[in-house]
Image (cartoon, rainbow, N blue to C red):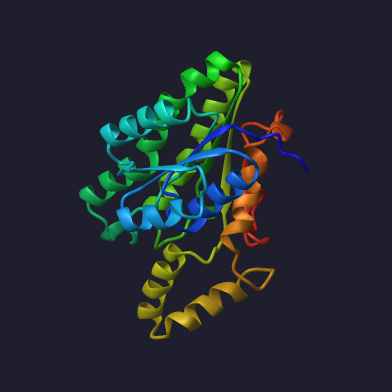
Length: 258
């Protein structure tokens, strides 16, 4: 299927590894000119080596000044963004009663407010052109809260509502806004969570990952490129009548209504 993305400018957040990098690579293969950001220079350079013609920017997406600089540099070098993928990182892990105000504030800035700010920066040019694609990468905990991921569960549920609100507001201008809710995917974040579980249960990290895979109807963890494929479709010209959707890509794990 031709996704119609040749020469589109795509900005992918936190794309030095995991789902972000897989998404940047997928969009580059479809002909996009890709701009990525990350906080670590070595990781950013390694990612750019896999993205011919791509550009990168050191940025902490929790900081508005970093976001503004990334958008400005991208527009100068590649042009205004046609596609924005807000692949925000995971907030602090812990039970509701164990988390302090500073951790909640950190989560809000790194998971919710940065999404609000990025859309605010990207939308005006998309509206002017009458075309744009915004995809928020969140998590299945938006639909099935996880006690150990109290901040993530709370904020990502809010992101589902934000997705619908932004989709309604931007639809008349030819801009779609959708969410992708990955399930258990083999990334550094998944290993971090497996370490927490392993320590609590007195098992190895490898066994923790095995148990997590066994909990999925497909009996395996997702590969990051499987999540990226869904993101690429929602970013495409072929998905022109899909907006306001929060799409589970979880191997059938979530038991409630989709």
